[in-house]
Image (tube, rainbow, N blue to C red; front, side, top):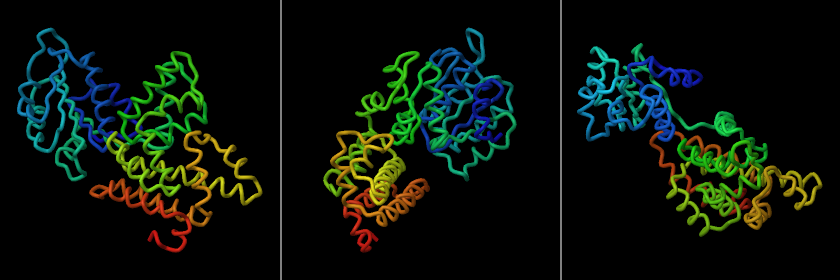
Length: 340
């Protein structure tokens, strides 16, 4: 049965209702998190060898054996399968026709829309088919807020806005940052913009911000170094596009404020969240290099980059590098059409 995005929480909370749960999509961190939630719901733990059998690609052939085995200590068993694919379709079909109460949790991040296993799971009444794609916008902000609320931690609006531009597209990366912030704030604590910047300042998002600021300031060498660090830390190309677009919008806000009569210093100080002090020279240089018309064009093409990065089969890393290299040429070059 295909589970609607709004019903995923309920489906996982009642994981024991299903015979099998299929988790697929682009966010491997979210797939792992939801798989663990389902396993824990039924087996009450992730590492009990009598109730939880974990199978990787090399041990997929043991799926039926493990799924039909009895627990030596009682309780319902779970078979947790990693790196699942269409090759498991026949085994899963036979298991669902057999008399067994074992829950099978399948992690299958590589499944396409034409997958036979996915099509089968979406139609079978005893199988939950759950898509796991990177969260964006309000959904991502809500995930952070909910996780902090469970620890009775509040976060200022400016801090949330700044954090949103730094989080990677992968759920594992998001979860790691949330855990660091929760540990720093402590139960019942409060997170302001300075605290969040200090805590997240050394994360992979730093490299993304460095790359974006270097590109807008015309620092070719800085772009190359920052992008290499970001991708080495596991940053997703789509996250590069988001960080660059957020920076372009900030530079545009300053340019528009100057046009309305504010001084550059006043306009920059009025930005929320504020510019990190270590990046102020690069940001100021970006404001100097980019006129309003060029910024609008750069924002449009950066949005197009994000859409391209979300399409399967696109050389997203190459597209990111080429786009940031074109930004290094500066606004006047864009207006003359050099970046085309």
